[in-house]
Length: 170
Image (cartoon, rainbow, N blue to C red):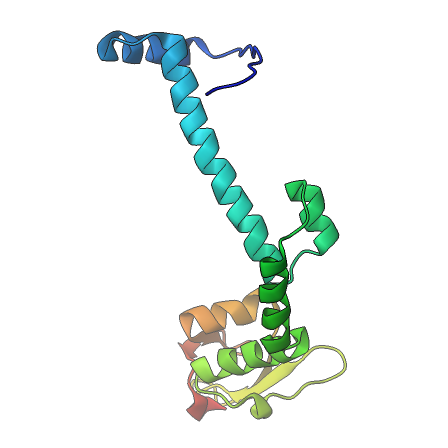
């Protein structure tokens, strides 16, 4: 660390100071030197990771050039701007991404997204319970549907019995 220095004072818990004394005594280094070196190493790694994260977000189009400047204190280089413009040209619109995600969700449990009935209120899916043989509809939004996708199990609203969620019950 060469150049100007600034004094910084920290207020630490006693347990942490005791740990620092233990480390300094056993490594045979001065406490201040050990803290300075460890802190500078950790801070440099964290700063590099944060800069890389901001650059990735800029390149993917999640933050604007103004936000990049505000966070980094400089404008993005021409090379980053070129990469960003190529990425944005090849990236589908958010609507297309949502449609693809929705299709993937349904196909992962063996459904065709076209089998889902969407009403103006809440999209639902029609199924027949193998236990009570009654037909029901379940919402395909929210936490309940996420649980169905995760566990591949449905609880019939009529008889309260659970069954494996497979296409043959639809």
